[in-house]
Image (cartoon, rainbow, N blue to C red; front, side, top):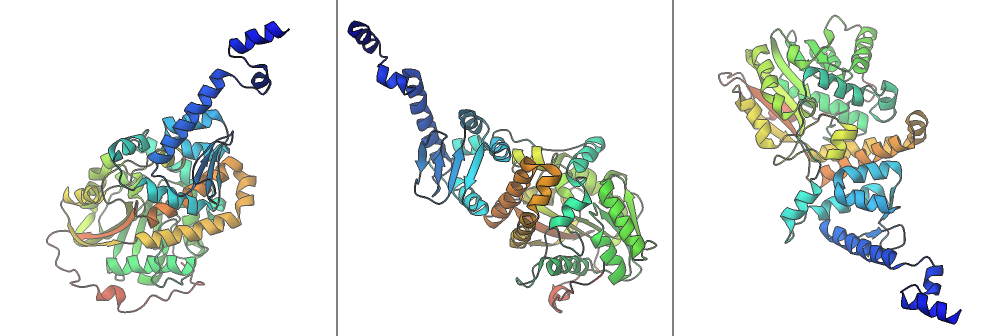
Length: 433
């Protein structure tokens, strides 16, 4: 027996360590995974949090109240291979867990990942793996919109404002506004920028649930033709217009923006450009060009960036398929292609961060209902999407641009911004739109 034991020890198989599940190959793998974890921690900018593996191995700040835990070996290697896409997928499935307040942890990750380092270019290439530029033909666009917006009006009603169901950036002219007040303020802000007058005709591309179209018709006496390819949204918008007795002023059309025809005094698009795709910007500009009359004014409201970059691959694949967020130069290039004169550009970035804070809070209030309807992975994915978006707007990774434009020869334009701010916006929450 003694000789047999000595043979096993000599061969590197100590019976004591073998009984504990030890093997040279497992030890080597553990050392490699510890090294990979340390490298990953440095690659994301060494934020003040803890990365933890399934076996208790840590990197970063072990005592931090913010911790990201990978629950299995496959999760680590998947995260290393496609960090952006895998992070969202692993979190949604529960294979990656975040301990600490979600938005605060994402704040820290976004803040430190953007810091310069000696290997900044390599880190950016690693973090951008799997990203793609988006663009869609009409059939694909309809499928993309159906995937996101036709989840059911009841889902969005849980956490959007209760007045206009606006799924775009609100306008917190007063930081103490409720979400409902801020969304009504946004509609008023847009109408003031467009200089609406009774009897004018307006074309809206991508009308959501119809809140802006109804607001313009009721409060400014204009006639609106609003286009959208989401069947759920169009159905809601038509019913609301019928109930309010303004369906003779507002026509909601289920069709692609490329099929818009006719002329108008004002052209507006709120939150649609993100779904158009860079390759289709000239097509949209062409539509505006053939519709907007010589003395007309247009406004485009869109998420943007300070410089061109692909959309986060997880957002593009799991939340907003086919989406693309333009850099400011790309956005201006769309207007140059006609060309239009850009009259005004306003950045509402922090307004969007505050909007998302409200949405996330309401989503969490109704999380149990979301789980009952769609399941736990769906609820985790959407909570991550809302929290991550809030953090990205706060850190400047995303912007919110409102661009007002007109034909170069149009001289019936304001020479200052007094019409926007001469009277404060004091919206009533019980207003009907």
